[in-house]
Length: 492
Image (tube, rainbow, N blue to C red; front, side, top):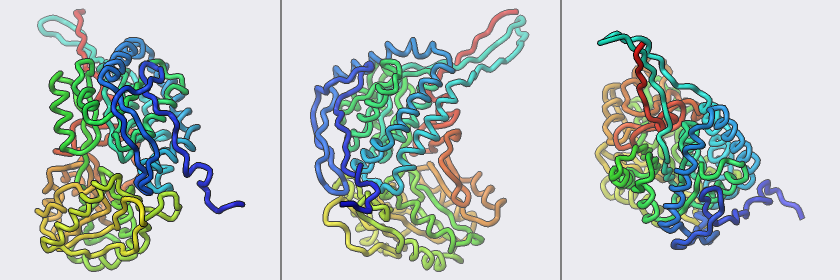
Protein backbone atom coordinates (compact mmCIF):
# COMPACT_ATOMS: atom_id res chain seq x y z
CA UNK A 1 0.00 0.00 0.00
CA UNK A 2 1.35 3.42 -0.93
CA UNK A 3 0.52 6.81 0.54
CA UNK A 4 0.91 10.39 -0.57
CA UNK A 5 2.91 11.25 2.57
CA UNK A 6 6.36 12.44 1.40
CA UNK A 7 7.68 12.14 4.94
CA UNK A 8 6.34 8.68 5.76
CA UNK A 9 9.85 7.20 5.87
CA UNK A 10 11.13 9.66 8.51
CA UNK A 11 8.15 11.13 10.38
CA UNK A 12 8.41 8.71 13.33
CA UNK A 13 12.19 8.52 13.47
CA UNK A 14 13.89 9.53 16.72
CA UNK A 15 17.67 9.36 17.22
CA UNK A 16 18.68 6.44 19.40
CA UNK A 17 21.76 8.01 20.93
CA UNK A 18 21.38 9.09 24.56
CA UNK A 19 25.08 9.37 25.37
CA UNK A 20 27.07 12.48 26.11
CA UNK A 21 30.11 13.42 24.05
CA UNK A 22 33.14 14.10 26.24
CA UNK A 23 36.65 14.14 24.86
CA UNK A 24 35.55 12.48 21.64
CA UNK A 25 34.02 9.50 23.44
CA UNK A 26 30.41 8.48 23.99
CA UNK A 27 29.77 8.62 27.74
CA UNK A 28 26.76 7.19 29.59
CA UNK A 29 24.99 9.94 31.59
CA UNK A 30 25.19 9.66 35.37
CA UNK A 31 22.74 12.41 36.38
CA UNK A 32 18.99 12.80 36.74
CA UNK A 33 16.66 11.55 34.02
CA UNK A 34 13.58 13.14 32.49
CA UNK A 35 11.12 12.53 29.69
CA UNK A 36 11.11 14.35 26.37
CA UNK A 37 7.66 14.95 24.94
CA UNK A 38 6.53 15.58 21.38
CA UNK A 39 4.62 18.88 21.77
CA UNK A 40 2.33 18.09 18.83
CA UNK A 41 1.15 14.70 20.12
CA UNK A 42 1.94 14.80 23.87
CA UNK A 43 3.63 11.41 23.38
CA UNK A 44 6.79 10.62 25.30
CA UNK A 45 9.45 10.16 22.65
CA UNK A 46 12.52 9.61 24.81
CA UNK A 47 13.90 9.35 28.30
CA UNK A 48 17.12 11.28 28.64
CA UNK A 49 19.77 11.14 31.33
CA UNK A 50 21.62 14.28 32.28
CA UNK A 51 25.27 14.75 33.09
CA UNK A 52 26.52 14.65 36.65
CA UNK A 53 28.58 17.59 37.89
CA UNK A 54 31.66 15.37 37.61
CA UNK A 55 30.84 14.78 33.94
CA UNK A 56 30.48 18.52 33.38
CA UNK A 57 33.93 18.89 34.93
CA UNK A 58 35.23 16.19 32.60
CA UNK A 59 33.75 17.93 29.55
CA UNK A 60 35.38 21.24 30.52
CA UNK A 61 38.68 19.46 31.14
CA UNK A 62 38.44 17.76 27.75
CA UNK A 63 37.84 21.11 26.07
CA UNK A 64 40.80 22.57 27.97
CA UNK A 65 43.08 19.71 26.92
CA UNK A 66 42.02 20.13 23.29
CA UNK A 67 42.38 23.90 23.32
CA UNK A 68 46.14 24.04 22.93
CA UNK A 69 46.38 21.74 19.90
CA UNK A 70 43.25 23.19 18.24
CA UNK A 71 44.32 26.82 18.76
CA UNK A 72 47.74 26.06 17.27
CA UNK A 73 46.31 24.65 14.05
CA UNK A 74 46.49 26.93 11.07
CA UNK A 75 43.30 28.65 10.00
CA UNK A 76 43.29 26.50 6.88
CA UNK A 77 43.38 23.34 9.00
CA UNK A 78 40.53 24.48 11.26
CA UNK A 79 38.58 25.45 8.15
CA UNK A 80 38.96 21.96 6.70
CA UNK A 81 37.66 20.40 9.93
CA UNK A 82 34.64 22.73 9.99
CA UNK A 83 33.82 22.05 6.35
CA UNK A 84 34.06 18.33 7.04
CA UNK A 85 31.62 18.72 9.94
CA UNK A 86 29.28 20.66 7.63
CA UNK A 87 29.54 17.84 5.08
CA UNK A 88 28.56 15.34 7.76
CA UNK A 89 25.57 17.42 8.88
CA UNK A 90 24.40 17.87 5.30
CA UNK A 91 24.53 14.12 4.74
CA UNK A 92 22.50 13.63 7.94
CA UNK A 93 19.61 15.94 7.02
CA UNK A 94 17.15 13.04 6.98
CA UNK A 95 18.11 12.38 10.61
CA UNK A 96 18.24 15.99 11.78
CA UNK A 97 14.90 17.01 10.25
CA UNK A 98 12.65 14.45 12.03
CA UNK A 99 14.54 14.95 15.27
CA UNK A 100 13.75 18.67 15.20
CA UNK A 101 10.15 18.35 13.99
CA UNK A 102 9.33 15.73 16.63
CA UNK A 103 10.92 17.44 19.62
CA UNK A 104 10.37 21.13 18.76
CA UNK A 105 7.13 20.92 16.74
CA UNK A 106 8.30 23.19 13.93
CA UNK A 107 6.20 22.48 10.81
CA UNK A 108 8.21 20.47 8.30
CA UNK A 109 7.33 23.02 5.62
CA UNK A 110 9.53 25.51 7.52
CA UNK A 111 11.96 23.27 9.38
CA UNK A 112 13.83 21.88 6.38
CA UNK A 113 15.35 25.28 5.62
CA UNK A 114 14.98 27.32 8.80
CA UNK A 115 16.07 24.60 11.20
CA UNK A 116 18.58 22.60 9.16
CA UNK A 117 19.81 23.92 5.81
CA UNK A 118 20.27 27.55 6.86
CA UNK A 119 22.31 26.54 9.90
CA UNK A 120 24.64 24.28 7.96
CA UNK A 121 24.84 25.70 4.45
CA UNK A 122 24.85 29.39 5.41
CA UNK A 123 26.28 29.73 8.89
CA UNK A 124 28.61 26.79 9.48
CA UNK A 125 30.09 27.18 5.99
CA UNK A 126 30.71 30.88 6.66
CA UNK A 127 32.44 30.03 9.95
CA UNK A 128 34.63 27.52 8.14
CA UNK A 129 35.80 30.22 5.73
CA UNK A 130 36.18 32.76 8.56
CA UNK A 131 38.68 30.44 10.24
CA UNK A 132 41.16 31.25 7.46
CA UNK A 133 41.20 35.01 8.05
CA UNK A 134 44.35 36.64 9.45
CA UNK A 135 43.03 39.45 11.63
CA UNK A 136 46.40 40.96 12.53
CA UNK A 137 46.46 44.77 12.38
CA UNK A 138 49.84 46.37 11.63
CA UNK A 139 49.85 49.74 13.39
CA UNK A 140 53.19 50.85 11.96
CA UNK A 141 55.73 53.13 13.59
CA UNK A 142 55.43 55.14 16.81
CA UNK A 143 58.14 57.59 17.88
CA UNK A 144 57.68 58.35 21.60
CA UNK A 145 59.90 58.12 23.57
CA UNK A 146 61.81 56.19 20.90
CA UNK A 147 60.94 54.49 17.61
CA UNK A 148 58.82 51.35 17.86
CA UNK A 149 56.55 49.20 15.72
CA UNK A 150 53.27 47.58 16.78
CA UNK A 151 50.96 44.79 15.76
CA UNK A 152 47.55 43.99 17.19
CA UNK A 153 46.80 40.27 17.09
CA UNK A 154 43.61 38.33 17.82
CA UNK A 155 43.97 35.14 19.85
CA UNK A 156 41.37 32.54 20.90
CA UNK A 157 39.87 33.19 24.33
CA UNK A 158 39.87 29.56 25.50
CA UNK A 159 37.05 27.24 26.54
CA UNK A 160 33.49 28.33 25.72
CA UNK A 161 30.29 27.16 27.41
CA UNK A 162 27.41 27.29 24.91
CA UNK A 163 23.91 27.07 26.42
CA UNK A 164 21.14 27.04 23.83
CA UNK A 165 17.38 27.67 23.79
CA UNK A 166 14.76 25.09 22.86
CA UNK A 167 13.29 26.72 19.76
CA UNK A 168 16.17 26.30 17.28
CA UNK A 169 18.48 23.65 18.77
CA UNK A 170 20.78 23.13 15.78
CA UNK A 171 20.84 26.76 14.65
CA UNK A 172 21.68 28.14 18.06
CA UNK A 173 24.47 25.63 18.60
CA UNK A 174 26.04 26.44 15.22
CA UNK A 175 25.57 30.20 15.61
CA UNK A 176 27.91 29.96 18.59
CA UNK A 177 30.30 27.07 18.10
CA UNK A 178 30.88 28.10 14.48
CA UNK A 179 32.42 31.39 15.55
CA UNK A 180 34.12 29.89 18.59
CA UNK A 181 35.86 27.10 16.67
CA UNK A 182 36.78 29.44 13.81
CA UNK A 183 38.42 31.69 16.40
CA UNK A 184 40.45 28.77 17.75
CA UNK A 185 38.40 28.08 20.88
CA UNK A 186 37.01 24.76 22.08
CA UNK A 187 33.53 24.33 23.56
CA UNK A 188 31.03 22.48 25.72
CA UNK A 189 27.45 22.59 24.41
CA UNK A 190 24.44 22.33 26.74
CA UNK A 191 20.99 22.35 25.07
CA UNK A 192 17.66 23.19 26.64
CA UNK A 193 16.34 20.16 28.56
CA UNK A 194 13.09 20.59 26.63
CA UNK A 195 14.78 19.72 23.33
CA UNK A 196 17.98 17.74 24.03
CA UNK A 197 17.63 15.01 21.40
CA UNK A 198 18.87 16.98 18.38
CA UNK A 199 21.97 18.13 20.27
CA UNK A 200 22.71 14.56 21.37
CA UNK A 201 22.46 13.60 17.70
CA UNK A 202 24.80 16.49 16.92
CA UNK A 203 27.30 14.90 19.32
CA UNK A 204 27.10 11.67 17.37
CA UNK A 205 27.64 13.53 14.10
CA UNK A 206 30.61 15.40 15.56
CA UNK A 207 32.24 12.01 16.20
CA UNK A 208 31.37 10.84 12.69
CA UNK A 209 32.98 13.93 11.17
CA UNK A 210 36.37 13.20 12.73
CA UNK A 211 36.61 16.54 14.56
CA UNK A 212 39.59 16.28 16.94
CA UNK A 213 38.70 14.85 20.34
CA UNK A 214 37.57 17.40 22.91
CA UNK A 215 37.16 20.31 20.52
CA UNK A 216 33.35 20.07 20.82
CA UNK A 217 31.75 18.34 23.78
CA UNK A 218 28.04 17.76 24.39
CA UNK A 219 26.36 17.44 27.77
CA UNK A 220 22.69 17.64 28.70
CA UNK A 221 20.98 18.43 31.97
CA UNK A 222 18.57 20.64 33.82
CA UNK A 223 19.05 23.78 35.89
CA UNK A 224 21.82 22.56 38.20
CA UNK A 225 23.89 21.31 35.29
CA UNK A 226 23.55 24.67 33.55
CA UNK A 227 24.51 26.53 36.71
CA UNK A 228 27.57 24.33 37.21
CA UNK A 229 28.71 24.88 33.62
CA UNK A 230 28.15 28.64 33.45
CA UNK A 231 29.97 29.21 36.77
CA UNK A 232 32.78 26.74 36.07
CA UNK A 233 36.25 28.17 36.73
CA UNK A 234 37.58 26.31 33.68
CA UNK A 235 35.31 28.24 31.31
CA UNK A 236 36.64 31.43 29.70
CA UNK A 237 33.51 32.51 27.80
CA UNK A 238 29.82 31.79 28.30
CA UNK A 239 27.28 32.13 25.50
CA UNK A 240 23.59 31.80 26.31
CA UNK A 241 20.47 32.05 24.17
CA UNK A 242 17.12 32.29 25.96
CA UNK A 243 14.96 34.59 28.05
CA UNK A 244 16.23 37.80 29.60
CA UNK A 245 15.33 36.60 33.11
CA UNK A 246 17.47 33.46 32.76
CA UNK A 247 20.13 35.56 31.02
CA UNK A 248 20.44 37.63 34.20
CA UNK A 249 21.21 34.49 36.20
CA UNK A 250 23.70 33.22 33.61
CA UNK A 251 25.49 36.57 33.71
CA UNK A 252 25.70 36.47 37.51
CA UNK A 253 27.10 32.95 37.40
CA UNK A 254 29.71 33.78 34.75
CA UNK A 255 30.70 36.91 36.68
CA UNK A 256 32.01 34.78 39.56
CA UNK A 257 35.00 33.97 37.37
CA UNK A 258 34.94 37.23 35.39
CA UNK A 259 34.29 35.09 32.31
CA UNK A 260 33.33 36.83 29.10
CA UNK A 261 29.66 36.68 28.20
CA UNK A 262 27.55 36.65 25.05
CA UNK A 263 23.79 36.82 25.55
CA UNK A 264 21.02 36.67 22.95
CA UNK A 265 17.84 37.21 24.92
CA UNK A 266 14.93 37.87 22.63
CA UNK A 267 12.84 40.97 22.15
CA UNK A 268 9.58 42.71 21.41
CA UNK A 269 10.35 43.70 17.86
CA UNK A 270 8.32 46.36 16.02
CA UNK A 271 7.18 46.18 12.42
CA UNK A 272 6.31 49.69 11.23
CA UNK A 273 3.89 50.27 8.35
CA UNK A 274 4.37 53.74 6.87
CA UNK A 275 1.70 55.54 4.80
CA UNK A 276 3.38 54.70 1.48
CA UNK A 277 3.51 50.94 2.14
CA UNK A 278 1.52 48.60 -0.09
CA UNK A 279 -0.46 46.98 2.72
CA UNK A 280 -2.27 44.58 0.42
CA UNK A 281 0.99 42.94 -0.60
CA UNK A 282 2.75 42.95 2.79
CA UNK A 283 0.02 41.86 5.21
CA UNK A 284 0.38 38.16 4.41
CA UNK A 285 4.16 38.17 4.86
CA UNK A 286 3.98 40.17 8.09
CA UNK A 287 1.49 37.90 9.82
CA UNK A 288 2.96 34.60 8.68
CA UNK A 289 6.38 35.78 9.79
CA UNK A 290 5.56 36.51 13.43
CA UNK A 291 3.50 33.32 13.69
CA UNK A 292 6.13 30.94 12.29
CA UNK A 293 7.58 28.34 14.66
CA UNK A 294 4.44 29.00 16.70
CA UNK A 295 5.68 32.52 17.42
CA UNK A 296 8.56 30.99 19.37
CA UNK A 297 11.26 33.11 17.78
CA UNK A 298 13.43 35.72 19.44
CA UNK A 299 13.14 38.17 16.55
CA UNK A 300 9.41 37.70 15.95
CA UNK A 301 8.05 41.02 14.61
CA UNK A 302 4.92 40.83 16.74
CA UNK A 303 4.49 44.51 17.67
CA UNK A 304 2.74 46.01 14.64
CA UNK A 305 2.83 49.81 14.40
CA UNK A 306 0.57 50.94 11.56
CA UNK A 307 0.00 54.48 10.35
CA UNK A 308 -3.53 55.56 11.18
CA UNK A 309 -4.31 56.29 7.51
CA UNK A 310 -3.67 52.62 6.60
CA UNK A 311 -4.91 50.97 9.79
CA UNK A 312 -8.35 49.78 8.61
CA UNK A 313 -7.01 48.70 5.24
CA UNK A 314 -4.24 46.75 6.93
CA UNK A 315 -6.74 44.89 9.11
CA UNK A 316 -8.84 44.01 6.08
CA UNK A 317 -5.78 42.71 4.24
CA UNK A 318 -4.68 40.78 7.31
CA UNK A 319 -7.88 38.78 7.38
CA UNK A 320 -6.66 36.94 4.31
CA UNK A 321 -3.40 36.08 6.03
CA UNK A 322 -5.23 34.59 9.00
CA UNK A 323 -7.25 32.48 6.57
CA UNK A 324 -3.94 31.03 5.38
CA UNK A 325 -2.75 30.07 8.87
CA UNK A 326 -2.98 26.32 9.41
CA UNK A 327 -2.47 25.11 12.97
CA UNK A 328 -1.87 21.42 13.48
CA UNK A 329 0.25 18.38 12.63
CA UNK A 330 3.81 19.60 11.94
CA UNK A 331 4.30 16.76 9.44
CA UNK A 332 1.41 17.99 7.28
CA UNK A 333 3.00 20.13 4.52
CA UNK A 334 0.00 22.49 4.73
CA UNK A 335 0.66 23.32 8.40
CA UNK A 336 2.49 26.59 9.07
CA UNK A 337 1.83 27.07 12.81
CA UNK A 338 2.99 24.35 15.17
CA UNK A 339 2.50 23.81 18.92
CA UNK A 340 3.89 25.51 21.99
CA UNK A 341 6.73 23.55 23.50
CA UNK A 342 5.00 22.53 26.77
CA UNK A 343 1.60 22.94 28.47
CA UNK A 344 2.97 25.46 30.97
CA UNK A 345 4.21 27.61 28.11
CA UNK A 346 0.84 27.32 26.35
CA UNK A 347 -0.83 28.47 29.57
CA UNK A 348 1.54 31.43 29.78
CA UNK A 349 0.74 32.49 26.21
CA UNK A 350 -2.99 32.12 26.81
CA UNK A 351 -2.57 34.11 30.02
CA UNK A 352 -1.22 37.09 28.09
CA UNK A 353 -4.31 37.04 25.86
CA UNK A 354 -6.73 36.72 28.78
CA UNK A 355 -5.09 39.57 30.68
CA UNK A 356 -5.16 41.80 27.59
CA UNK A 357 -8.88 41.13 27.02
CA UNK A 358 -9.69 41.69 30.70
CA UNK A 359 -8.01 45.09 30.56
CA UNK A 360 -9.97 46.32 27.53
CA UNK A 361 -8.08 44.77 24.64
CA UNK A 362 -9.92 43.14 21.77
CA UNK A 363 -9.25 40.34 19.30
CA UNK A 364 -9.12 42.06 15.92
CA UNK A 365 -8.14 38.96 13.97
CA UNK A 366 -7.89 35.33 15.00
CA UNK A 367 -7.91 31.79 13.73
CA UNK A 368 -11.15 30.14 14.84
CA UNK A 369 -10.61 26.63 13.54
CA UNK A 370 -10.83 23.80 16.09
CA UNK A 371 -7.48 22.81 17.55
CA UNK A 372 -6.22 19.22 17.51
CA UNK A 373 -7.34 17.15 20.48
CA UNK A 374 -3.72 16.42 21.38
CA UNK A 375 -0.79 18.79 21.45
CA UNK A 376 -0.03 22.16 23.01
CA UNK A 377 -1.56 24.33 20.30
CA UNK A 378 -2.70 27.95 20.42
CA UNK A 379 -4.69 29.64 17.66
CA UNK A 380 -2.97 32.81 16.37
CA UNK A 381 -4.53 36.09 17.41
CA UNK A 382 -4.01 39.80 16.74
CA UNK A 383 -4.80 42.01 19.73
CA UNK A 384 -5.74 45.67 19.55
CA UNK A 385 -7.17 48.53 21.63
CA UNK A 386 -4.25 48.33 24.06
CA UNK A 387 -2.06 51.16 25.37
CA UNK A 388 1.62 50.91 24.55
CA UNK A 389 2.29 50.33 28.24
CA UNK A 390 0.23 47.11 28.34
CA UNK A 391 2.11 43.95 29.31
CA UNK A 392 1.14 42.22 26.06
CA UNK A 393 2.70 45.12 24.15
CA UNK A 394 5.88 45.40 26.20
CA UNK A 395 6.79 41.81 27.11
CA UNK A 396 7.91 38.94 24.92
CA UNK A 397 4.98 36.49 24.61
CA UNK A 398 6.87 33.84 22.59
CA UNK A 399 3.70 32.50 21.05
CA UNK A 400 1.41 33.18 18.06
CA UNK A 401 0.12 36.45 19.47
CA UNK A 402 0.71 39.90 17.96
CA UNK A 403 -0.41 43.37 18.97
CA UNK A 404 -1.28 46.28 16.71
CA UNK A 405 -1.18 50.00 17.51
CA UNK A 406 -1.83 53.03 15.27
CA UNK A 407 0.47 56.05 15.03
CA UNK A 408 0.04 59.44 13.40
CA UNK A 409 3.56 60.77 12.69
CA UNK A 410 6.99 59.39 11.90
CA UNK A 411 8.26 60.79 15.19
CA UNK A 412 5.54 58.96 17.10
CA UNK A 413 6.35 55.71 15.29
CA UNK A 414 10.02 55.99 16.22
CA UNK A 415 9.19 56.87 19.81
CA UNK A 416 6.93 53.82 20.08
CA UNK A 417 9.47 51.56 18.35
CA UNK A 418 12.14 52.54 20.87
CA UNK A 419 9.82 52.52 23.88
CA UNK A 420 10.87 49.07 25.04
CA UNK A 421 13.54 47.48 27.22
CA UNK A 422 14.44 45.26 24.25
CA UNK A 423 16.23 46.03 21.01
CA UNK A 424 16.79 42.89 18.97
CA UNK A 425 15.14 43.58 15.61
CA UNK A 426 12.74 45.85 13.75
CA UNK A 427 11.25 46.31 10.31
CA UNK A 428 10.16 49.39 8.35
CA UNK A 429 7.69 49.05 5.47
CA UNK A 430 7.81 52.02 3.12
CA UNK A 431 7.96 52.75 -0.60
CA UNK A 432 10.16 55.77 0.19
CA UNK A 433 13.71 54.38 0.40
CA UNK A 434 15.17 57.53 1.98
CA UNK A 435 12.45 57.63 4.62
CA UNK A 436 12.94 53.97 5.49
CA UNK A 437 16.74 54.24 5.74
CA UNK A 438 16.48 57.37 7.89
CA UNK A 439 14.08 55.58 10.25
CA UNK A 440 16.26 52.46 10.37
CA UNK A 441 19.18 54.56 11.56
CA UNK A 442 17.09 55.92 14.45
CA UNK A 443 15.71 52.60 15.71
CA UNK A 444 17.65 51.11 18.60
CA UNK A 445 17.87 47.49 17.49
CA UNK A 446 20.65 45.17 16.42
CA UNK A 447 18.98 44.31 13.11
CA UNK A 448 16.62 46.53 11.15
CA UNK A 449 15.02 45.19 8.01
CA UNK A 450 13.50 47.41 5.34
CA UNK A 451 10.51 45.99 3.48
CA UNK A 452 11.08 42.57 4.97
CA UNK A 453 14.80 42.41 4.35
CA UNK A 454 16.12 39.04 3.26
CA UNK A 455 17.69 35.85 4.54
CA UNK A 456 19.70 35.60 7.74
CA UNK A 457 23.16 36.26 6.32
CA UNK A 458 26.07 34.24 7.61
CA UNK A 459 28.36 37.27 7.28
CA UNK A 460 26.12 39.70 9.21
CA UNK A 461 26.00 40.19 13.01
CA UNK A 462 22.99 39.18 15.08
CA UNK A 463 22.26 40.45 18.57
CA UNK A 464 20.57 43.32 20.31
CA UNK A 465 20.44 46.39 22.49
CA UNK A 466 19.22 46.61 26.09
CA UNK A 467 17.66 43.47 27.52
CA UNK A 468 18.00 41.76 24.15
CA UNK A 469 21.51 40.87 25.15
CA UNK A 470 25.23 41.50 25.07
CA UNK A 471 27.57 40.89 22.15
CA UNK A 472 26.86 39.51 18.71
CA UNK A 473 26.57 36.14 17.01
CA UNK A 474 27.46 35.36 13.38
CA UNK A 475 29.69 37.06 10.86
CA UNK A 476 33.09 38.50 11.67
CA UNK A 477 31.60 39.91 14.86
CA UNK A 478 30.60 36.43 15.99
CA UNK A 479 34.19 35.25 15.62
CA UNK A 480 35.65 38.17 17.56
CA UNK A 481 33.31 37.42 20.47
CA UNK A 482 35.63 34.48 21.17
CA UNK A 483 38.96 36.22 20.76
CA UNK A 484 41.26 38.26 22.97
CA UNK A 485 43.08 41.29 21.58
CA UNK A 486 46.83 41.57 22.16
CA UNK A 487 49.11 44.52 21.42
CA UNK A 488 52.72 43.55 20.53
CA UNK A 489 55.21 46.45 20.42
CA UNK A 490 58.94 46.33 19.71
CA UNK A 491 61.78 48.83 19.38
CA UNK A 492 63.34 49.52 16.03
